[in-house]
Length: 308
Image (cartoon, rainbow, N blue to C red; front, side, top):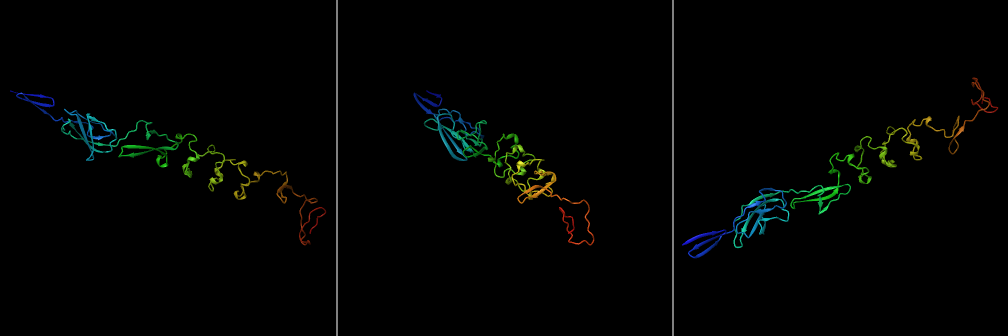
């Protein structure tokens, strides 16, 4: 008499009163993740179905057609603790029951793509520390594709990093732009709109002669009475700086002279003085006879009324 009986994972054959046990190989697992195609996850999760009679699993991964990693685990999943670099991967898994292997699963092929993520507006960090930007600094992002990493640095903001007209008056705080922050010759005439520089924007003594180009200040550029005596240094206005007719008699002060006086050189300076008087001068015309003697001179003064 022969009976045949089975149990899960084994084959038992009863021949007469003898029992022969045949152990089956582990089952064949099936890969569940990652899915085929592009994989943006930096650390893909590898998982598979549980195989019958399996006590451990061997996960085999290739990268760009070359053996890259093998991992033993007693679980039906494996989560790496490091980032996978970009590349094309193939993964498969096989079960082990302690004595023999089962069959390899079908391969799953995926491509690891570079897709770093920044968490939130305050999540930008460098070496684990939050970046604090100083005045005049921005950020520079360095991409390390092989390490699947973004490195963020603080760096100065330069002209090449600014879009045309991106910095406008409304975006600049009062007194944010100081002389120390401006490079030499960074502000030129072509960068200033008409009327941009007013008196209120200039500090006392900010405009000096060495800062003015030749001909930069003309009469047409000065408002009436803009330059007063207090604004002129001693000796700053010379004859060479005055145009012909620039000084009219009506513009001249009396300098202490009274009516009828003129300027007279005293030997040291010009001072007001009276014109000498001519006493005894008769009113009328002076005529000369055709044959008058002498050299033609006339002597005026007290008791002198003759021809010379």
